[in-house]
Image (tube, rainbow, N blue to C red; front, side, top):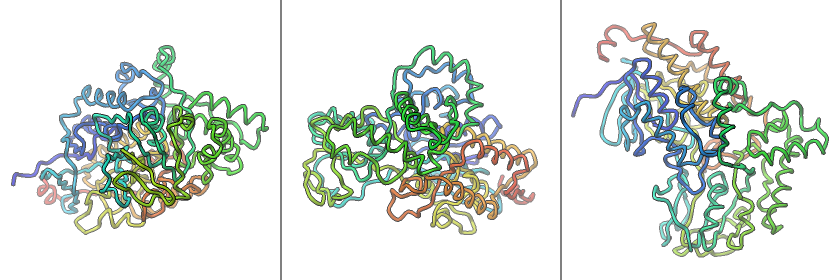
Length: 545
Protein backbone atom coordinates (compact mmCIF):
# COMPACT_ATOMS: atom_id res chain seq x y z
CA UNK A 1 0.00 0.00 0.00
CA UNK A 2 1.40 3.39 -0.98
CA UNK A 3 2.03 6.14 1.54
CA UNK A 4 -0.94 8.39 2.20
CA UNK A 5 -0.92 11.69 0.35
CA UNK A 6 -1.10 14.75 2.59
CA UNK A 7 -2.73 18.08 1.82
CA UNK A 8 -3.68 21.17 3.72
CA UNK A 9 -7.32 20.90 2.68
CA UNK A 10 -9.63 18.37 1.06
CA UNK A 11 -12.68 19.57 -0.85
CA UNK A 12 -15.53 17.15 -1.53
CA UNK A 13 -17.43 18.20 -4.66
CA UNK A 14 -16.62 20.26 -7.75
CA UNK A 15 -19.79 22.25 -8.29
CA UNK A 16 -19.87 26.04 -8.04
CA UNK A 17 -18.98 25.97 -4.32
CA UNK A 18 -16.20 23.41 -4.58
CA UNK A 19 -14.54 25.14 -7.52
CA UNK A 20 -14.46 28.48 -5.75
CA UNK A 21 -13.09 26.77 -2.62
CA UNK A 22 -10.18 25.36 -4.63
CA UNK A 23 -9.43 28.77 -6.09
CA UNK A 24 -9.73 30.65 -2.78
CA UNK A 25 -7.70 28.18 -0.71
CA UNK A 26 -4.96 28.13 -3.32
CA UNK A 27 -4.65 31.90 -2.94
CA UNK A 28 -3.85 31.30 0.73
CA UNK A 29 -0.96 29.08 -0.38
CA UNK A 30 -2.67 25.88 0.72
CA UNK A 31 -2.27 22.54 -1.02
CA UNK A 32 -5.73 21.33 -2.03
CA UNK A 33 -7.17 18.09 -3.34
CA UNK A 34 -10.79 17.87 -4.48
CA UNK A 35 -12.81 14.76 -5.20
CA UNK A 36 -15.80 14.71 -7.54
CA UNK A 37 -18.11 11.75 -8.19
CA UNK A 38 -18.98 13.02 -11.67
CA UNK A 39 -16.67 12.80 -14.68
CA UNK A 40 -16.31 16.58 -14.82
CA UNK A 41 -17.11 19.83 -13.04
CA UNK A 42 -20.56 21.38 -12.61
CA UNK A 43 -22.30 19.71 -9.70
CA UNK A 44 -26.07 19.97 -10.11
CA UNK A 45 -25.57 21.44 -13.60
CA UNK A 46 -23.56 18.37 -14.62
CA UNK A 47 -26.25 15.89 -13.60
CA UNK A 48 -29.50 17.73 -14.35
CA UNK A 49 -29.70 17.62 -18.15
CA UNK A 50 -33.42 17.01 -18.47
CA UNK A 51 -35.36 18.81 -21.23
CA UNK A 52 -35.98 22.46 -20.39
CA UNK A 53 -33.57 22.58 -17.44
CA UNK A 54 -32.92 26.25 -16.75
CA UNK A 55 -31.91 28.46 -13.83
CA UNK A 56 -34.64 30.46 -12.08
CA UNK A 57 -32.27 33.33 -11.24
CA UNK A 58 -31.34 35.73 -14.03
CA UNK A 59 -28.04 34.93 -15.74
CA UNK A 60 -26.33 38.23 -14.93
CA UNK A 61 -26.95 37.59 -11.23
CA UNK A 62 -26.36 33.82 -11.20
CA UNK A 63 -22.63 34.04 -11.79
CA UNK A 64 -19.39 34.40 -9.87
CA UNK A 65 -18.40 37.82 -8.56
CA UNK A 66 -14.83 37.06 -7.38
CA UNK A 67 -13.23 38.07 -10.69
CA UNK A 68 -14.25 41.25 -12.46
CA UNK A 69 -12.48 40.09 -15.62
CA UNK A 70 -14.59 36.92 -15.60
CA UNK A 71 -17.89 38.70 -15.13
CA UNK A 72 -17.03 41.25 -17.83
CA UNK A 73 -15.86 38.77 -20.46
CA UNK A 74 -18.64 36.18 -20.27
CA UNK A 75 -21.69 36.74 -22.45
CA UNK A 76 -25.00 35.20 -21.41
CA UNK A 77 -27.24 34.65 -24.47
CA UNK A 78 -30.56 34.66 -22.59
CA UNK A 79 -32.24 36.27 -19.58
CA UNK A 80 -32.27 32.90 -17.78
CA UNK A 81 -29.41 30.50 -18.40
CA UNK A 82 -30.09 27.02 -19.75
CA UNK A 83 -28.33 24.01 -18.24
CA UNK A 84 -25.98 23.63 -21.25
CA UNK A 85 -25.03 27.31 -21.10
CA UNK A 86 -24.44 27.29 -17.34
CA UNK A 87 -22.33 24.15 -17.67
CA UNK A 88 -20.28 25.83 -20.43
CA UNK A 89 -19.74 28.76 -18.07
CA UNK A 90 -18.63 26.52 -15.19
CA UNK A 91 -16.23 24.68 -17.52
CA UNK A 92 -14.87 28.04 -18.66
CA UNK A 93 -14.22 29.01 -15.02
CA UNK A 94 -12.46 25.70 -14.36
CA UNK A 95 -10.25 26.23 -17.42
CA UNK A 96 -9.61 29.93 -16.88
CA UNK A 97 -8.37 29.39 -13.32
CA UNK A 98 -6.74 26.01 -13.99
CA UNK A 99 -8.83 24.28 -11.33
CA UNK A 100 -8.94 20.77 -12.78
CA UNK A 101 -5.36 19.96 -11.83
CA UNK A 102 -6.43 19.70 -8.19
CA UNK A 103 -9.54 17.59 -8.84
CA UNK A 104 -9.89 13.81 -9.08
CA UNK A 105 -12.99 13.04 -11.14
CA UNK A 106 -15.13 9.90 -11.17
CA UNK A 107 -14.12 9.50 -7.56
CA UNK A 108 -16.65 9.22 -4.75
CA UNK A 109 -15.64 9.86 -1.14
CA UNK A 110 -16.76 6.91 0.95
CA UNK A 111 -15.33 7.77 4.36
CA UNK A 112 -13.89 10.71 6.30
CA UNK A 113 -12.46 10.13 9.79
CA UNK A 114 -11.11 12.79 12.18
CA UNK A 115 -8.05 12.06 14.35
CA UNK A 116 -8.14 14.17 17.51
CA UNK A 117 -4.46 13.48 18.28
CA UNK A 118 -3.15 15.06 15.09
CA UNK A 119 -6.18 17.25 14.25
CA UNK A 120 -6.39 15.81 10.74
CA UNK A 121 -9.00 14.21 8.53
CA UNK A 122 -8.34 10.97 6.67
CA UNK A 123 -10.47 10.53 3.57
CA UNK A 124 -10.97 7.29 1.66
CA UNK A 125 -12.46 7.05 -1.83
CA UNK A 126 -14.14 4.34 -3.88
CA UNK A 127 -11.01 4.15 -6.03
CA UNK A 128 -8.99 2.93 -3.06
CA UNK A 129 -7.15 6.18 -2.44
CA UNK A 130 -6.48 7.47 1.10
CA UNK A 131 -5.49 11.09 1.74
CA UNK A 132 -5.12 13.23 4.85
CA UNK A 133 -5.55 16.93 5.46
CA UNK A 134 -5.92 19.41 8.28
CA UNK A 135 -9.26 20.66 6.94
CA UNK A 136 -12.11 18.92 5.17
CA UNK A 137 -14.60 21.10 3.26
CA UNK A 138 -17.90 19.56 2.20
CA UNK A 139 -19.06 21.11 -1.07
CA UNK A 140 -21.53 18.29 -1.64
CA UNK A 141 -24.44 20.51 -2.66
CA UNK A 142 -28.03 20.83 -1.49
CA UNK A 143 -29.74 19.18 -4.46
CA UNK A 144 -27.28 16.46 -5.39
CA UNK A 145 -28.79 13.20 -4.11
CA UNK A 146 -31.67 12.18 -6.40
CA UNK A 147 -34.66 10.60 -4.72
CA UNK A 148 -34.79 7.37 -6.65
CA UNK A 149 -38.23 5.89 -7.25
CA UNK A 150 -39.50 3.20 -4.91
CA UNK A 151 -42.56 1.91 -6.74
CA UNK A 152 -43.59 -1.73 -6.85
CA UNK A 153 -42.99 -3.42 -10.17
CA UNK A 154 -40.47 -0.96 -11.59
CA UNK A 155 -38.02 -3.76 -12.39
CA UNK A 156 -40.67 -5.41 -14.55
CA UNK A 157 -41.15 -2.37 -16.80
CA UNK A 158 -40.29 -3.25 -20.38
CA UNK A 159 -39.87 0.37 -21.50
CA UNK A 160 -37.21 2.83 -20.34
CA UNK A 161 -37.34 5.01 -17.26
CA UNK A 162 -35.36 8.13 -16.34
CA UNK A 163 -34.80 10.42 -13.35
CA UNK A 164 -34.52 14.14 -14.09
CA UNK A 165 -31.50 14.38 -11.76
CA UNK A 166 -29.64 11.55 -13.55
CA UNK A 167 -30.45 12.36 -17.16
CA UNK A 168 -28.57 10.59 -19.99
CA UNK A 169 -25.91 12.88 -21.43
CA UNK A 170 -26.86 11.97 -24.96
CA UNK A 171 -30.42 13.18 -24.34
CA UNK A 172 -33.70 11.36 -24.91
CA UNK A 173 -36.03 11.59 -27.92
CA UNK A 174 -39.65 10.91 -26.92
CA UNK A 175 -41.03 11.32 -30.44
CA UNK A 176 -43.91 8.95 -31.05
CA UNK A 177 -43.83 7.51 -27.52
CA UNK A 178 -46.43 7.26 -24.77
CA UNK A 179 -44.71 8.94 -21.82
CA UNK A 180 -45.57 9.25 -18.15
CA UNK A 181 -44.04 12.03 -16.03
CA UNK A 182 -44.33 11.49 -12.29
CA UNK A 183 -43.94 14.69 -10.29
CA UNK A 184 -44.74 18.35 -10.86
CA UNK A 185 -41.97 20.09 -8.95
CA UNK A 186 -39.45 22.28 -10.75
CA UNK A 187 -37.90 19.62 -13.00
CA UNK A 188 -41.33 18.27 -13.95
CA UNK A 189 -42.73 21.72 -14.71
CA UNK A 190 -39.70 22.61 -16.85
CA UNK A 191 -39.62 19.34 -18.80
CA UNK A 192 -43.36 18.70 -19.33
CA UNK A 193 -43.88 21.37 -22.06
CA UNK A 194 -40.97 20.01 -24.11
CA UNK A 195 -41.87 16.34 -23.64
CA UNK A 196 -45.50 17.23 -24.46
CA UNK A 197 -44.40 18.57 -27.86
CA UNK A 198 -42.48 15.37 -28.65
CA UNK A 199 -44.59 12.57 -27.22
CA UNK A 200 -47.40 10.75 -28.96
CA UNK A 201 -49.22 11.11 -25.64
CA UNK A 202 -48.03 12.50 -22.31
CA UNK A 203 -49.61 11.53 -19.00
CA UNK A 204 -48.65 13.79 -16.09
CA UNK A 205 -49.10 12.06 -12.73
CA UNK A 206 -49.58 14.80 -10.13
CA UNK A 207 -49.85 14.29 -6.39
CA UNK A 208 -49.49 17.93 -5.35
CA UNK A 209 -50.09 21.00 -7.48
CA UNK A 210 -47.33 23.61 -7.20
CA UNK A 211 -47.36 27.32 -7.94
CA UNK A 212 -45.48 28.27 -11.08
CA UNK A 213 -44.95 31.70 -12.61
CA UNK A 214 -44.02 32.64 -16.18
CA UNK A 215 -40.28 33.20 -16.64
CA UNK A 216 -40.72 35.51 -19.64
CA UNK A 217 -37.36 34.36 -20.89
CA UNK A 218 -35.95 36.41 -23.79
CA UNK A 219 -32.62 36.77 -25.62
CA UNK A 220 -30.18 38.93 -23.67
CA UNK A 221 -30.46 42.60 -24.54
CA UNK A 222 -27.04 44.05 -25.36
CA UNK A 223 -28.05 47.33 -23.73
CA UNK A 224 -29.18 45.57 -20.57
CA UNK A 225 -26.00 43.52 -20.45
CA UNK A 226 -23.80 46.59 -20.99
CA UNK A 227 -25.57 48.57 -18.26
CA UNK A 228 -25.52 45.66 -15.82
CA UNK A 229 -21.82 44.99 -16.32
CA UNK A 230 -20.99 48.68 -15.85
CA UNK A 231 -22.81 48.55 -12.50
CA UNK A 232 -21.50 45.15 -11.36
CA UNK A 233 -19.51 46.32 -8.28
CA UNK A 234 -22.46 48.27 -6.88
CA UNK A 235 -24.93 45.53 -7.77
CA UNK A 236 -22.85 42.82 -6.11
CA UNK A 237 -22.62 44.91 -2.91
CA UNK A 238 -26.34 45.64 -3.04
CA UNK A 239 -27.17 41.94 -3.35
CA UNK A 240 -25.90 41.38 0.22
CA UNK A 241 -28.52 43.86 1.42
CA UNK A 242 -31.43 41.91 -0.07
CA UNK A 243 -33.23 38.93 1.54
CA UNK A 244 -32.48 36.51 -1.31
CA UNK A 245 -29.09 37.89 -2.34
CA UNK A 246 -30.43 39.21 -5.65
CA UNK A 247 -30.17 42.90 -6.50
CA UNK A 248 -32.27 44.92 -8.90
CA UNK A 249 -35.72 44.52 -7.39
CA UNK A 250 -37.08 47.57 -5.54
CA UNK A 251 -38.03 46.52 -2.00
CA UNK A 252 -41.75 46.59 -1.25
CA UNK A 253 -43.09 49.48 0.83
CA UNK A 254 -46.30 48.15 2.36
CA UNK A 255 -48.44 45.19 3.30
CA UNK A 256 -50.73 43.63 0.74
CA UNK A 257 -53.60 44.42 3.12
CA UNK A 258 -52.77 48.12 3.03
CA UNK A 259 -53.39 48.20 -0.71
CA UNK A 260 -56.80 48.37 -2.33
CA UNK A 261 -58.03 45.42 -4.37
CA UNK A 262 -57.46 47.45 -7.53
CA UNK A 263 -53.88 48.33 -6.49
CA UNK A 264 -53.09 44.70 -5.67
CA UNK A 265 -54.39 43.41 -8.97
CA UNK A 266 -52.39 46.05 -10.82
CA UNK A 267 -49.23 45.16 -8.91
CA UNK A 268 -49.65 41.42 -9.46
CA UNK A 269 -50.46 41.89 -13.16
CA UNK A 270 -47.29 43.94 -13.60
CA UNK A 271 -45.18 41.29 -11.86
CA UNK A 272 -46.85 38.51 -13.88
CA UNK A 273 -46.04 40.35 -17.11
CA UNK A 274 -42.46 41.04 -15.98
CA UNK A 275 -41.75 37.40 -15.09
CA UNK A 276 -39.62 36.03 -12.27
CA UNK A 277 -40.29 34.65 -8.82
CA UNK A 278 -38.30 37.06 -6.62
CA UNK A 279 -39.97 40.03 -8.26
CA UNK A 280 -43.41 38.56 -7.57
CA UNK A 281 -42.66 37.87 -3.90
CA UNK A 282 -41.40 41.46 -3.64
CA UNK A 283 -44.87 42.79 -4.47
CA UNK A 284 -45.58 43.42 -0.77
CA UNK A 285 -43.71 43.25 2.52
CA UNK A 286 -45.65 40.40 4.10
CA UNK A 287 -46.44 37.77 1.47
CA UNK A 288 -44.35 35.21 3.37
CA UNK A 289 -45.39 36.41 6.82
CA UNK A 290 -49.15 36.95 6.78
CA UNK A 291 -51.57 34.28 5.55
CA UNK A 292 -54.28 36.80 4.67
CA UNK A 293 -51.82 38.82 2.58
CA UNK A 294 -50.50 35.68 0.95
CA UNK A 295 -54.02 34.59 0.05
CA UNK A 296 -54.33 37.61 -2.24
CA UNK A 297 -51.26 36.54 -4.23
CA UNK A 298 -52.14 32.84 -4.19
CA UNK A 299 -55.64 33.50 -5.48
CA UNK A 300 -54.31 35.80 -8.20
CA UNK A 301 -52.18 32.95 -9.57
CA UNK A 302 -55.02 30.44 -9.26
CA UNK A 303 -57.19 32.79 -11.34
CA UNK A 304 -54.44 32.93 -13.97
CA UNK A 305 -54.32 29.12 -14.09
CA UNK A 306 -58.10 28.91 -14.53
CA UNK A 307 -57.97 31.52 -17.29
CA UNK A 308 -55.16 29.67 -19.11
CA UNK A 309 -56.25 26.02 -18.90
CA UNK A 310 -59.35 25.43 -21.01
CA UNK A 311 -60.70 22.33 -19.27
CA UNK A 312 -62.17 23.47 -15.93
CA UNK A 313 -61.56 20.14 -14.16
CA UNK A 314 -57.90 20.07 -15.22
CA UNK A 315 -57.48 23.72 -14.28
CA UNK A 316 -58.82 23.08 -10.79
CA UNK A 317 -56.45 20.14 -10.29
CA UNK A 318 -53.56 22.43 -11.26
CA UNK A 319 -54.57 25.07 -8.68
CA UNK A 320 -52.49 24.58 -5.50
CA UNK A 321 -54.71 24.35 -2.45
CA UNK A 322 -52.52 23.03 0.35
CA UNK A 323 -49.76 25.63 0.79
CA UNK A 324 -49.33 29.42 0.54
CA UNK A 325 -47.49 30.67 -2.54
CA UNK A 326 -43.74 30.91 -1.98
CA UNK A 327 -43.60 28.44 0.92
CA UNK A 328 -42.51 25.68 -1.45
CA UNK A 329 -40.00 26.41 -4.17
CA UNK A 330 -41.69 28.92 -6.46
CA UNK A 331 -41.21 27.55 -9.95
CA UNK A 332 -40.60 29.48 -13.16
CA UNK A 333 -41.90 28.02 -16.40
CA UNK A 334 -42.37 28.56 -20.09
CA UNK A 335 -45.83 27.51 -21.34
CA UNK A 336 -46.41 25.00 -18.52
CA UNK A 337 -50.13 25.60 -18.01
CA UNK A 338 -50.65 26.10 -21.75
CA UNK A 339 -49.35 22.55 -22.30
CA UNK A 340 -52.50 21.11 -20.75
CA UNK A 341 -54.50 22.54 -23.66
CA UNK A 342 -52.75 20.13 -26.01
CA UNK A 343 -54.85 17.18 -27.13
CA UNK A 344 -52.02 14.74 -26.41
CA UNK A 345 -51.50 15.73 -22.74
CA UNK A 346 -53.52 14.27 -19.85
CA UNK A 347 -53.27 15.25 -16.18
CA UNK A 348 -53.80 12.34 -13.77
CA UNK A 349 -54.62 13.09 -10.13
CA UNK A 350 -52.71 10.61 -7.97
CA UNK A 351 -53.56 12.34 -4.71
CA UNK A 352 -57.08 10.85 -4.84
CA UNK A 353 -56.12 7.78 -6.91
CA UNK A 354 -52.53 6.83 -5.95
CA UNK A 355 -50.11 4.87 -8.09
CA UNK A 356 -50.33 1.18 -7.19
CA UNK A 357 -47.53 -0.30 -9.29
CA UNK A 358 -45.53 -0.18 -12.46
CA UNK A 359 -46.48 -2.95 -14.86
CA UNK A 360 -44.46 -4.42 -17.74
CA UNK A 361 -46.41 -2.23 -20.17
CA UNK A 362 -47.07 0.90 -18.11
CA UNK A 363 -48.48 2.02 -14.82
CA UNK A 364 -51.55 1.24 -12.72
CA UNK A 365 -53.27 3.68 -10.38
CA UNK A 366 -56.11 2.92 -7.96
CA UNK A 367 -58.68 3.25 -10.74
CA UNK A 368 -56.99 2.88 -14.14
CA UNK A 369 -54.11 1.45 -16.17
CA UNK A 370 -51.93 3.55 -18.46
CA UNK A 371 -49.94 2.09 -21.34
CA UNK A 372 -46.49 3.71 -21.39
CA UNK A 373 -43.31 3.36 -23.43
CA UNK A 374 -41.23 5.55 -21.10
CA UNK A 375 -41.48 6.92 -17.56
CA UNK A 376 -39.81 10.09 -16.26
CA UNK A 377 -39.42 10.43 -12.51
CA UNK A 378 -39.35 14.11 -11.56
CA UNK A 379 -39.31 13.16 -7.88
CA UNK A 380 -36.64 15.48 -6.56
CA UNK A 381 -33.78 15.02 -4.12
CA UNK A 382 -32.91 14.05 -0.58
CA UNK A 383 -32.17 17.73 -0.13
CA UNK A 384 -29.55 19.42 2.03
CA UNK A 385 -28.51 16.39 4.12
CA UNK A 386 -28.62 13.45 1.72
CA UNK A 387 -25.17 13.80 0.16
CA UNK A 388 -23.30 14.16 3.46
CA UNK A 389 -25.19 11.30 5.12
CA UNK A 390 -24.18 9.01 2.25
CA UNK A 391 -20.56 9.42 3.38
CA UNK A 392 -19.29 7.65 6.52
CA UNK A 393 -18.18 10.78 8.38
CA UNK A 394 -17.08 10.13 11.95
CA UNK A 395 -14.50 11.06 14.55
CA UNK A 396 -12.05 8.93 16.46
CA UNK A 397 -14.33 9.11 19.50
CA UNK A 398 -17.06 7.39 17.50
CA UNK A 399 -19.46 10.23 16.73
CA UNK A 400 -20.95 9.93 13.20
CA UNK A 401 -22.96 12.31 11.05
CA UNK A 402 -25.68 9.67 10.73
CA UNK A 403 -26.08 9.60 14.54
CA UNK A 404 -25.67 13.35 14.97
CA UNK A 405 -28.35 14.09 12.36
CA UNK A 406 -30.64 11.17 13.16
CA UNK A 407 -33.44 13.54 14.20
CA UNK A 408 -32.57 16.19 11.61
CA UNK A 409 -29.54 18.36 10.86
CA UNK A 410 -27.94 20.46 13.59
CA UNK A 411 -25.24 22.97 12.69
CA UNK A 412 -23.72 26.25 13.78
CA UNK A 413 -24.42 28.79 11.03
CA UNK A 414 -24.67 25.99 8.48
CA UNK A 415 -20.87 26.15 8.42
CA UNK A 416 -19.73 23.66 11.07
CA UNK A 417 -21.08 20.90 13.32
CA UNK A 418 -20.40 20.52 17.05
CA UNK A 419 -18.32 17.40 17.62
CA UNK A 420 -16.68 17.53 14.16
CA UNK A 421 -13.56 19.72 14.32
CA UNK A 422 -12.02 21.17 11.14
CA UNK A 423 -15.02 20.03 9.07
CA UNK A 424 -16.58 22.89 7.13
CA UNK A 425 -19.71 22.91 4.97
CA UNK A 426 -20.51 25.17 2.04
CA UNK A 427 -24.19 26.21 2.24
CA UNK A 428 -25.00 23.57 4.83
CA UNK A 429 -28.36 23.14 6.58
CA UNK A 430 -29.45 26.18 8.63
CA UNK A 431 -27.74 28.59 6.26
CA UNK A 432 -29.63 30.64 3.62
CA UNK A 433 -28.18 28.62 0.69
CA UNK A 434 -31.26 27.28 -1.09
CA UNK A 435 -33.28 30.38 -0.16
CA UNK A 436 -30.82 32.70 -1.87
CA UNK A 437 -28.78 33.18 -5.02
CA UNK A 438 -26.67 30.05 -4.64
CA UNK A 439 -23.42 31.33 -6.15
CA UNK A 440 -23.47 34.35 -3.82
CA UNK A 441 -24.16 31.99 -0.90
CA UNK A 442 -21.25 29.76 -1.95
CA UNK A 443 -18.87 32.70 -2.28
CA UNK A 444 -19.87 34.10 1.11
CA UNK A 445 -19.30 30.73 2.80
CA UNK A 446 -16.01 30.02 1.07
CA UNK A 447 -14.69 33.49 1.87
CA UNK A 448 -15.65 32.99 5.54
CA UNK A 449 -13.98 29.56 5.63
CA UNK A 450 -10.81 30.85 3.95
CA UNK A 451 -10.57 33.79 6.36
CA UNK A 452 -11.10 31.42 9.29
CA UNK A 453 -8.31 29.09 8.14
CA UNK A 454 -5.99 32.07 7.64
CA UNK A 455 -6.83 33.28 11.18
CA UNK A 456 -5.90 29.86 12.58
CA UNK A 457 -2.67 29.64 10.61
CA UNK A 458 -1.58 33.13 11.60
CA UNK A 459 -1.87 32.10 15.26
CA UNK A 460 -0.35 28.64 14.99
CA UNK A 461 -3.73 27.01 15.70
CA UNK A 462 -4.68 23.69 14.16
CA UNK A 463 -8.20 23.05 15.37
CA UNK A 464 -11.60 24.74 15.32
CA UNK A 465 -14.85 23.22 16.51
CA UNK A 466 -18.35 24.59 17.00
CA UNK A 467 -19.43 24.72 20.63
CA UNK A 468 -22.49 22.68 21.47
CA UNK A 469 -24.13 25.64 23.19
CA UNK A 470 -23.63 27.84 20.13
CA UNK A 471 -25.00 25.14 17.83
CA UNK A 472 -28.08 24.64 20.02
CA UNK A 473 -28.74 28.38 20.08
CA UNK A 474 -28.40 28.65 16.30
CA UNK A 475 -30.75 25.73 15.65
CA UNK A 476 -33.27 27.29 18.02
CA UNK A 477 -32.87 30.65 16.26
CA UNK A 478 -33.23 29.03 12.82
CA UNK A 479 -36.46 27.35 13.88
CA UNK A 480 -37.75 30.50 15.57
CA UNK A 481 -37.20 32.57 12.44
CA UNK A 482 -38.97 29.96 10.29
CA UNK A 483 -41.89 29.76 12.72
CA UNK A 484 -42.51 33.49 12.32
CA UNK A 485 -43.10 32.92 8.61
CA UNK A 486 -45.54 30.87 6.53
CA UNK A 487 -42.85 28.42 5.35
CA UNK A 488 -43.63 25.65 7.88
CA UNK A 489 -47.20 25.45 6.53
CA UNK A 490 -45.96 23.59 3.44
CA UNK A 491 -44.94 19.95 3.14
CA UNK A 492 -41.82 20.79 1.15
CA UNK A 493 -38.32 19.47 0.67
CA UNK A 494 -37.31 22.34 2.95
CA UNK A 495 -38.58 20.09 5.77
CA UNK A 496 -37.68 16.79 4.09
CA UNK A 497 -41.34 15.97 3.43
CA UNK A 498 -40.53 14.36 0.06
CA UNK A 499 -38.43 11.60 1.69
CA UNK A 500 -40.38 8.89 3.55
CA UNK A 501 -39.22 8.61 7.16
CA UNK A 502 -37.01 11.71 7.04
CA UNK A 503 -37.34 13.79 10.25
CA UNK A 504 -39.48 16.88 9.72
CA UNK A 505 -37.08 19.73 10.46
CA UNK A 506 -37.06 23.10 8.71
CA UNK A 507 -33.59 23.17 7.17
CA UNK A 508 -32.85 26.52 5.45
CA UNK A 509 -32.28 29.82 7.27
CA UNK A 510 -34.99 32.21 6.10
CA UNK A 511 -33.99 35.32 8.04
CA UNK A 512 -32.43 36.75 4.87
CA UNK A 513 -28.90 37.26 3.59
CA UNK A 514 -28.26 40.60 5.43
CA UNK A 515 -29.04 39.23 8.91
CA UNK A 516 -27.13 36.03 8.23
CA UNK A 517 -24.01 37.68 6.83
CA UNK A 518 -24.00 40.16 9.73
CA UNK A 519 -24.02 37.26 12.19
CA UNK A 520 -21.19 35.44 10.36
CA UNK A 521 -19.10 38.63 10.23
CA UNK A 522 -19.70 39.34 13.93
CA UNK A 523 -18.69 35.79 14.89
CA UNK A 524 -15.40 36.21 12.99
CA UNK A 525 -14.76 39.73 14.33
CA UNK A 526 -15.18 38.43 17.88
CA UNK A 527 -12.41 35.86 17.49
CA UNK A 528 -14.75 33.14 16.18
CA UNK A 529 -17.27 33.40 18.94
CA UNK A 530 -19.10 30.13 19.52
CA UNK A 531 -16.11 28.06 18.42
CA UNK A 532 -13.35 26.38 20.41
CA UNK A 533 -9.89 26.95 18.94
CA UNK A 534 -6.83 24.86 19.74
CA UNK A 535 -3.40 23.67 18.68
CA UNK A 536 -1.45 20.42 18.55
CA UNK A 537 1.44 19.84 20.92
CA UNK A 538 4.92 19.63 19.38
CA UNK A 539 4.73 15.82 19.58
CA UNK A 540 1.36 15.76 17.84
CA UNK A 541 2.56 18.17 15.16
CA UNK A 542 5.60 15.95 14.51
CA UNK A 543 3.34 12.87 14.22
CA UNK A 544 1.15 14.62 11.65
CA UNK A 545 4.12 15.55 9.42
